[in-house]
Amino acid sequence: MKSEIITIGDELLIGQVVDTNSAWMAQELNKIGITVNRINSIADNHDQIIQTLHEISERADVIFITGGLGPTRDDITKVALCDYFDSPLVFDQTSFENIQRIFNLRGYTMTEVNRKQAEIPACAEALQNIHGTAPGMLFRQKGKLYFSMPGVPFEMKALMTDHVLPMIKSLSKQVILHKTILTQGVGESFLADKIKDWESALPPHIKLAYLPQPGLVRLRLSSTGPSREILQKELDEKVALLYTLIDEYIFGEDDDNLETVIGNILKDQNLTLSTAESCTGGYIAHLITSIPGSSAYFNGSIVSYSNLVKINTLKVKPETLEKFGAVSQETVIEMAEGVKKALSTDCSIAVSGIAGPDGGTPDKPVGTVWIAISTPNKETMVKKFLFGEHRERNIRRSALAALDMLRKQLVNT
Image 1 (tube, one colour):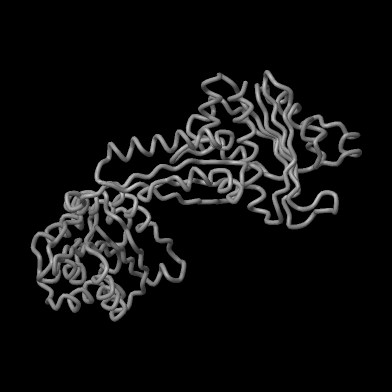
Image 2 (cartoon, rainbow, N blue to C red):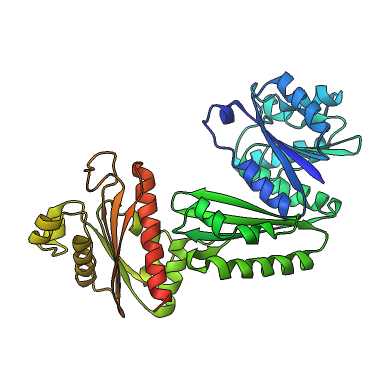
């Protein structure tokens, strides 16, 4: 079954509001076997709404519309729907009672504008919005379903969950399954070459997508068919084979992230961690402490942005900095050992580099980063990276590389 999503609002097209509705809807629709073929963002424009509906009705079986159902003049979706379906507005008593309930609950006085929100096209079925004053609407025409919902995310989600998804769940005869494998430390093209034979052997109903971002590449397998059990078994077999090919680069699956993976490993091994950060400016500590419960294994961080802090707090030798520089193997090793001692931890991460855009030299160009990892049972691991010229990407890539280095050290202990 094919579906499309229409999000309506000038604010989406000027970048003032990010369209999170479509992403959430697409995820939920996939779970019940509904394929989203296209997402359309359009302006609050009467003619454009009608034209888009005409175009989509030729392609899709189910159309989902969000936005433009508020009480103000710029909310014109309902008027456009009346014209598209050639249907007048009628007063819906149940919707009015819901609006009254909400106003009474909030202690507000209802105006005539709010009362008009209870008017819906005569051909529509009202979908009661318990969280807001704009009812959702269902239209049926020529075997197709049109769902119109408010653009406010929590109102739309409630309508989808309470009304729309249960209504259309039985309409789909297919199952859609996704499996995402998360990799770090390998580029997209190298990864593609590494698994090209495995990818070529995938059956037609299993699609592979490469989803790169700074420091990571996600491999998403999407499988479509009539049987969930058969698809799941097949996906499990393909993923197991993938592990035999690129196990060294895989750190997790689906919604995992490196900071969560690291936290679980540290807790399982009853270890503590500290960080000494120069070019990352505390970003590694930020990632680690973004995980609830991280205080069980993370003692703290020293952001040693200046050489003075490296010397006085981390006890990096002045002669080391003088001879090798702040961005060097020798310095990050001393940083890692210094922060571990200063904060009394079992493990430590130290990072020093040139994030950019300035500060590079012929010997140490922008993007040069040294990372050291110290753990209880192994010699301090140190590695040099050349990440590139973009400051924000360098910081992100440095942090992820450091976390993955620690992960490998701990799982191979």
